[in-house]
Image (cartoon, rainbow, N blue to C red; front, side, top):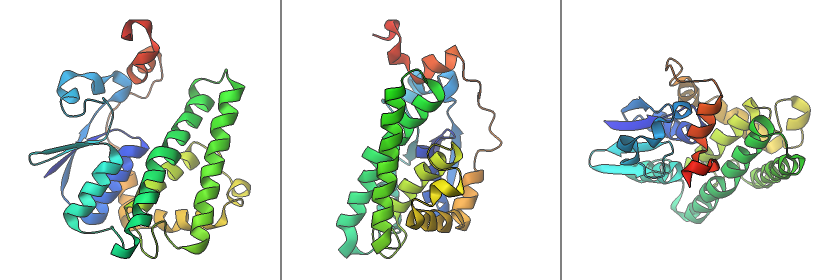
Length: 229
């Protein structure tokens, strides 16, 4: 059984979606990131980067959510799309990894955590909008990101779009969504998938810290403090 190290954030969620879609059995192992559990030596031995998710599959240990998606897709031979579209799959999978996800994360940081920099807030929100526009353009000519079928590229992007919507980052209302009609169609279709609905309920019973206090800041951003250097 696959062991999945988990917190309620978009990167673990995309892996949960893949596990639910593929039907692979897994055990959920919570990592309380607000309490700093990701920095414990036992977890750093699994993921030296001190982030979630990570998985242990037999004698294989993997971290980085998009790498895990690709591993699971190859392991099950599912959600890789048509072989002729492999270039598209890789392009959009890494678009989510290197663009969409990081910019969504920074936009939430500068709208929810550090609100003192109008420049940073504006920069990251505008970048999120730009990425949504790129996705909308792609979905004008293709039902899914990697072509005609649903793949891990869609899972990777969906988790961040869902998180952005929940945080009312750019979306959160009908008038905002109207700017990206193809993206909205794609988002609502994926949200209705039974496996995605199950995934969104995973971990709801976990008792993890929710208070965003000084301990949380030091746990999430230890490099921001002088003693970390």
